[in-house]
Image (tube, rainbow, N blue to C red):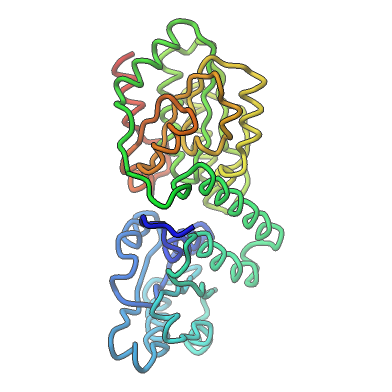
Length: 354
């Protein structure tokens, strides 16, 4: 499909994957402004991001010397445990050999080159550009590489079928009014209807989405509601740490949800979650994180309350029959660098109406 709306960057995807692989320093081999916003956000999450600041001179004569210089500076100044060198459009166009620069710099820090640029329509190319050299370096197993590829393909298929990539252009929306949706949700709970709350969140976004689960539970701990979450102990190191932190946070609040999968499996759990809904036959379902992962044939004749962080996800969710869709705006910046569950706007509104 030829998209005419902005799509996630494969360079940024490589940066986030470097973080998940345990890198504490990344070097963007390109102009100083490349991926500036995300680089700044990732620094709050423990990944120091440097740049080779390529300019006109390097565009003509090459930037290997600049990369070698920054690699040496990074090792001497910050003593990182792992380094990722991330490519950009410029490094691709001028044909940079980043692996040669790593070798010739003679640094001793474990370092891999992620040969990527922004000329891909799907950001999963950036993830794979990070994971393949990580497997070669022994940072992850070949089995995990294969698992990650299957998960990425599954998540991509969901986005194309029912997500923000399902149309060439989708009008961004703030979703339905949160206080109206929260009021209706509380009506369902107080009237004794049977419910289910499903956390199916992508990686660190679960730190905020989990708060909605807590707010529902706090509103009526004895209600006929069952709780499910994708917080199993699988995936890359950071993903497993995040899942444990959130499990611990939920337990403190008195919630021990049934595990459905891992935080990186959000895109392939649709049928599993759908079968749970089908077997339970609830009157209503609260689905937070990636609600569109669940095929619509499983949610017919059920009142659905969806919570997403994607303004372009509102229209597709309404299209597949989700009656109530709310958006947690700016969720991602608020969940970077955190290690415990953080308050959500929708969760706080539920509490205020309770």
